[in-house]
Image (cartoon, rainbow, N blue to C red):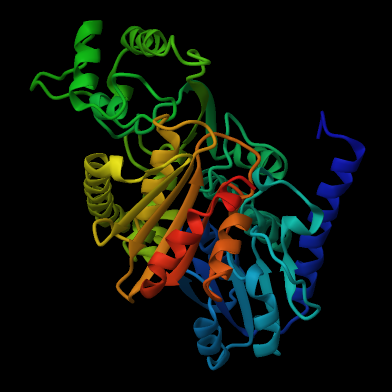
Length: 465
C-alpha cells in the first residue's frame, strides 16, 4: 500500500471488509442450497464465472451457470420462475437492483463493478462504487477472486484469472493499480512479469501481422497496412522468415532482431508525442506451453472475448479451468473471430468517410458488422490514432432480435462520462438497457428507434456537455 494516503488505505480496507461480510452472510446459508450463477459473456464475465464455479466446486456446492449478454426485465422475470435457492449475479445486475428486489425474496449476491443509481436493503451488493473507488481499481473477476479467497484461502491459485478479466476490461495500463495490484501479488506464484514491447500476439501471430494490427502503440506507415508491415521488416534486414518463406512469430526471433524491430518502431514514431512509449509489462503463465493463446494473459483475454462473442462461454470457462480438450475448439473459434474482425475492419475502412460528424464518429453498421463485434470494432477505431483525442466513437449494429446494439468509446484518456451521456440520449427515446463505464459503454434499443437515436447523438449540447 506504499504511496497511498491514509484515506485511500481505509477505503480499500472498507471494501475488503465488505467482501468478508458478504462471504460470512453466504456461508451462514444452508450448504445444500441450490445456487444459480448468472454472468456476462465477455472476458471479465467468463473469468468471474470460472473463479466462482471453481471455488463452489471445491466446497461441493450445488450450482448451475448461465452467461448472458445483459440483464433486462424479461430475463429477471424468467429467473424469478426458476427453482433455485440463491442467486449470484456476476459482472452485471447493479443497474437493476430495484427490479431484483421486487422479484426475489431469496438471497441475491451481486459481485459487480458497474455503476448503479439505486441501492436496496435486500440485495447483497459487493461493488467498488460503494466506496468511490476508481474504475481501474478492480474488475468483477477481481471481486469474485476476493470472494473466493475469503471463502477458502486455497483459492489463491485463481488470482491470475482475475487479472485476465481486468485486462479484458482494459484496466491494465503499464501495470495494475489499486486493489488489482494486491491481486497481482497473489498471482505471482502462477505468472511471470517482464518488461517488453507492447506488441499484442507475440506468442502466436506472425511478426508481420503483429505489426500490421498493432494499435497500442500505433506505428505510422505500418499499423493497418499489410504492405507497410512487410516493407518495414524487409528494410530492417532481419531474419524474419523461416526456411519456407513464412514469417516467424516474435518469440522465435533472436534478441538482436527484436532490438532492431523495437528501434525501427521508435524511429517510425518520432513524430508522435512519446515515440519511445512502446514498452509495458508482459504477463505470462509459468506452466503454460510457449506459443499458445493461453501463455500471455493479454492473448488469453482476447481468446475469452472471442468465445463469448461466438456464444461459446462454456468453452471459455473450461479453458480457464485448464481443460486440455477445449484447446482445439478454442483455436478454431479464435480463427473465426479474427476473420470476422478483419471483415469488420475492412468494411469500416471502405466506408469510414461516411461516419464523420466533427468530434463524433457514428459507425452505423446495420447488418454489415455482427452485433457481437461492434464493441471490438469501436475499441480498435478509438485506439487507432486516426482521430483526435476526445473524439467519440459510437458503433451501431443490428441484432437477430430486431434490436440495435450500441457501443460507445472515447479516443484517448480524457475525463468525460460517456456512460451518463449515452444514458441521457437513450432515456429520451425510451426505457432501454444502457450501462458500462465512463470511457466504454453500451445500450440496446429497438431497430425502429434508429433515426431518433442518431438525431439525439447529433445534439451538440450533449456532445459539448
